[in-house]
Amino acid sequence: MQHVPSAVFEGVDYVALGHLHGRQRLADGLRYSGSPLAFSFSEAAHVKSSYLVDFDAGGLRRVEEVPAPIPRRMARLTGSVEELLNSPAYSAYEQCWVEATLTDQVRPLSPHERLKRRFPHLLKLVVPSLTADVGSRDLADLDRLAPVEVALDFVTEVRGRPADGDEVALLHRTFDELRRLEATR
Figure (spheres, rainbow, N blue to C red):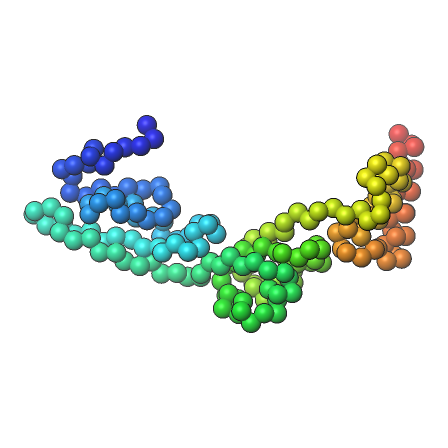
């Protein structure tokens, strides 16, 4: 049974329901207290509390909401790496648990490490998929490229700039070694 009508609890002084993360008051004596702490970023705006319930000989006397202490606020931030790192608008979130969603058009270098410097409590970094742009190459051409060329195109795509000379040499040595190992199998 997924739903229980509140009429089931008629005649009961107080029902403390559980499991929901967000508090809900269904009637004076019928409540979900919610969780005392936010457990995901979807709860960042939730007000957390508990209920202090008093009874007397006549039954339910009073329900008092007691705000839960918030050891560290949660924040969901959205912007480019540079905006998140430099805008004074984000100063208030530097000590929060942070979920950052990037809006950069080109995948930035080391975004997590860079953002952790400003937001030491960064817990989640969302980097939306960027549309692959293989430049002037037709996708059908990729099948005809040497694996090292595909890898170099990938480096350019991910970074927004081509590999430098040392990186090109390293990729060539790596693919040469892989070909040598495959030949000995």
